[in-house]
Length: 420
Image 1 (cartoon, rainbow, N blue to C red):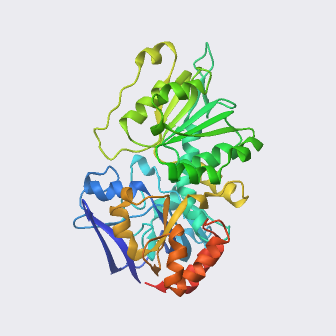
Image 2 (cartoon, rainbow, N blue to C red):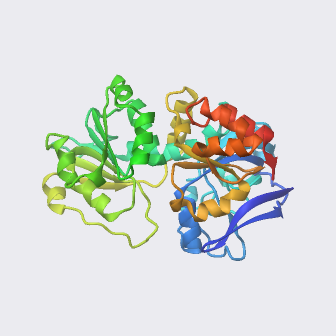
Image 3 (cartoon, rainbow, N blue to C red):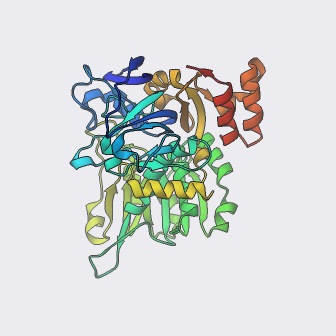
């Protein structure tokens, strides 16, 4: 079977190509990818090439398929897995396999599996590690977003606190405590806000900072303080670029007690250091954003580490349980990660989008991998609809849902888009 896929050959060398997939083995599964959302991690992979920790050294000879936030449909199942999976099943994949202690992951390390492809072969290790997850919900894009949501959920679970006089780590953010999400009005920040408001271990106070009014205004429209208050969370958005002394301002919001949990959503030295400065006693700083620069460094107050028991953690992806929680919360309508999506495109938009991702404003970029379509912003649909009948129909659907992507819009794309 032929597939079309975006493959990585080296640093800044991504190519959309058509090639033949080999026949599946007894322990493999053939699948069709329907949707993939582009992650900043894919941008980092494109920038680092073989220097990336998850990427093989020989990609110049044996390129890998990129994309790791994807969903699709199973087409054929090898004998080993026929008792567990069948053709027609919809799926999502947890890319953090942790297989035999390696960092190998779909979208980084494999020749025949990745999200930015029309057809893929799912290797045995994905099933062995129980990382091929059944998805029974409607549509496909929610399952694509289950992976980034699992990263957020994992970060919340990984935070910890210690009772005075003990050495026992109580896992999770402090219930009823003060939570700050710095640089938090981007797509992953929106997911974190959604989860914090609706999870079973909520903060009492949640402060979300950013330096972009457009991002903050959109975040405020999606998560109003009034709606958050209905769930017992006091929510406030802050543009720190407009403050002479943002650290003092943020501390004042906690009556100078500091924050129990701080999530840093941008790999920017001043933001990391500000996160450290606003920690309260036993405060946990979660460095969520993965830096592109392997030499990235920031200062931390070790006086507070010693006397105030502040501590630092980092998370890179969630685990399978986090992904199951994500899928469960979405299927129940508790969280709605569709809010993260601001752009949509087809497989032929992946190369340019991935290479330029930091320069494209907005949130998640959702790709329909069997469709040919330039990347477009949902907020540009009014103008696009004046020029093209395809976009006119899509604009009607999206505008009726407050410009939030939805199942009807996905069905419209899949039924009316040009097959690549």
